[in-house]
Structure formats: structure tokens, C-alpha cells
Image (cartoon, rainbow, N blue to C red; front, side, top):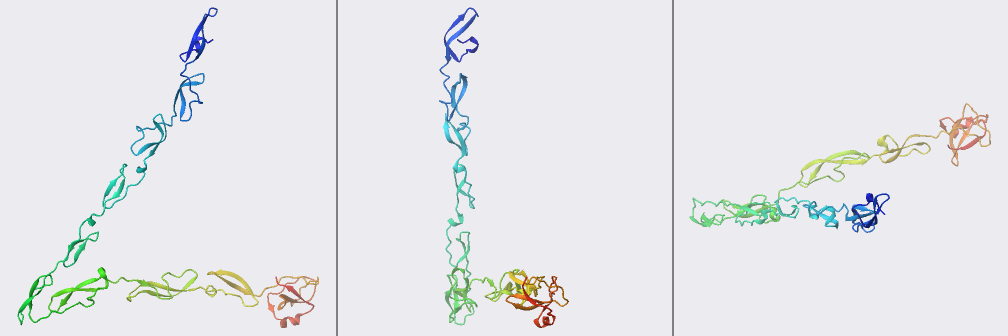
Length: 370
């Protein structure tokens, strides 16, 4: 039985008894209302329990809080995405067409997408005009190469003071004029021009002229020369690197004979350029030095023997005339002196056998070089 203190609107009870002793009205056969039916076992995934609870069960099963996007709070350049629950979605992402950058157009934008991004450009309006047809050649073109104005022509004047009268002839601009009879026009090209065109549209042009001043036809010459400079054989446009010595300079040359800039002649450094030798003479040894990518040597000298014991167990002492001699036996050097009991060092001088011979006061022994 349940007392009135713990029974509220969440429960339904079939009846209650009245306890006379305690003056209490006690409910019996009470249970949670049917609406309290949700737990994590039947309300999971996209949903979660909510509302009020009764003995571990809840009266609501709603979409989780992550499902919060709809057209009211995710619009414009964004759109709902992900999974849905109860008409709401758990994602709000930018629309793909809004991720593109607008095109930069020289002549204006021709089209936009739904995010107001420019997706196509207008073409050059200069290309939409027609070429002008010119009798005497084109004077100017637009940015698309279309002719926009024509060259003018000044007709030649009538000839006067004619000995043999006059006759009709060309004025050089498609019309006629009066020319002296008996004169036959002879047209030629100015100096440096040719009547044949070997250079196409890039050729420089001039009119053929007659000695009388009349003009007819076109002459051509090569386009203006552009200098191209290069270094002569054996020279380089770059300065000498650290492993090389500069031995000379000269100017860059164009095929037309013009000169500009500097070319450099270099040679590889040798050991002598650094005050070294490439190898020591036979006999002496030296200290190896790295110079300009080479292995060089300095301080070449004969090797000085240190203190050595004799091979028979005795040792050299300190005679007044003890010297190292150059004569060798299978790669060993000979020391000559008296066997006086103590250790002795060779002198720094390397002497010949002839020099050593007078000082031999005892056995001669051979020792390994240090």
C-alpha cells in the first residue's frame, strides 16, 4: 500500500483503504501511468528520454539536441545536412556552389551561380567588330587585332610644263591625273628596300617611286633588328667561382657587330696559387691541405725518428755524433752509434751513409719508421 504523500498524478490506483488506527487513507494497487514507458532500451540512437520520470521510466522520447537545424536557422549560403530527426538535421554546411571563388574578369562577368559567384566572363568586345576593308592598308588595329582605321592616300598632282602635251595617268590613289606625254614612268624601291617580301606581315614597307614623283606599288625590307648578345668561345657570362682564377675579360657580341656587357675567362686554381705543392719530393713527407677542391701539401721534410730500443735488447746511449741516415733496408732506416746503455734520439738532420760512416762506434741496427 502507498500513503498519500508519495502518490501523485504520475500514478493510477485501483482503490484505497482507510486505516482507522492511524487515521490514514492508504492506496493500493498503484502503478505508473501508461505514458511513462520510455527508457534507454526503447529510446536510443537519434532519440533520448525526456519529460518527467516515474520509477525509472519517462513520459517523452525526443530527438537529441544535436538535431537542431532546419530552414529557419540554416539557409542562405548554408544548407541542412547529415541525418534528420523530427524534421530537424544534425548538420548545417555551406552549399558547394558557395565554396567557389568568383572569376576575375577583364571585360565583366557574364553569369553568376545561386551564391552570386561569377562563373563565366564576357569576351573582349573588340573581337566582336568587323575588320575595315582598306584600299591603302590599315592604319590602326584594336586589342583584338581588328582594323579600325585605314591609311589615307594623297593623289599625285598634275604635271605641268610638258614639252609634248599631257595625257591621262594614274594619280597613285586609284584616280587619274595629267602626265606629260612622252614620259614613261619607271618605279624603283628606296635604298635598302626590295620589291619582294620575304618577311610577311612583319616587314617594313615603302612605296615605289618614279623620278617624276609618282608612286606605285610597295617595297619591303626586314623588320627592325633586335640585338642578341653572346660570349666568344672560351668565355662565360658568369664571374669566376671560388675554385677558379679570372684570366681575362671581353665584351658580349651581337651578330650585327654591336657589343654590350662583359664575358669572363677563367682557369682552375692549382696548388701553387695557394702557396702549396701538389706532392712532396721523393723521400720527404708533408702536411695535406684542402685547397680549391684539391689535395695539396706544405711543410715537406724528412721524417725524424724518435727514441728506439735496439733489436737485441740493448739501447743506444747519447754519443756526441748520433745521426739518422737515409740508407734503408726493406723500408727500415738505419741508426749508427755506440751502445752506451741509455735511450737516444736521432737528430733532425738526415745525413748520407758517407756522412754517417766515420761515426760508427758500434753495431748498426735497422728500425721501423714511426
